Image (cartoon, rainbow, N blue to C red; front, side, top):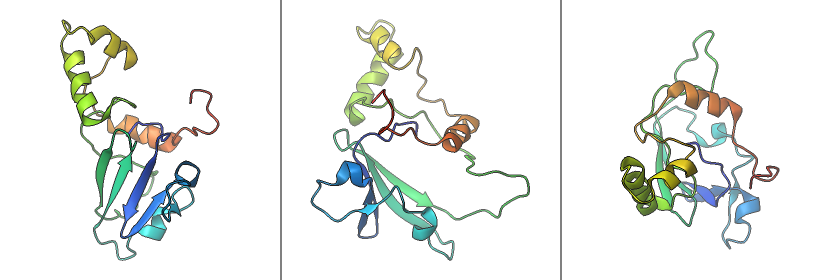
Length: 154
C-alpha cells in the first residue's frame, strides 16, 4: 500500500484478530501476533480462494477485503515477492479516511483550490491518483515496511 504500518491495524481471519501486540495490547480482546504469524500458517493448504479483512488506521477507518486467489507455480528465475498488477495510488498516510482523501483529491486536482499548493507539498510535490507501477510496488515489498519502533520520523 505504501503506508508506514505505524497506526492501529488488524486482520480479521475467520473469528480471530491478528495485529501488532505492541500497538493493540490495550484493546481488551484476544489478538494473535501478526508480526510473527506466517502467511503459510493462515492460507489454505489446498490453494483454494481465501478472503479476509484488513483494517488500517482505526481513526481513518481504511477497510480492505483481501482475496487470496492461489499460488502460481514458481518459474525458474522468478524472485518473490512479485507484484503483477494493481490499480491506483495509495492515499497518503494520515489523509483523513475516505472524506479526507476526497478533499485531498479535490485540492490536488484544482490549481485554483486554496489548499492546492499545501496539499501537493504535503504529498511530496506531486500526486497522481491513477498512478500504479508494479515494478515500484515489487521493490517496496522486497524492502519491507519501515520499523516505526526504531525510526526517528515517527
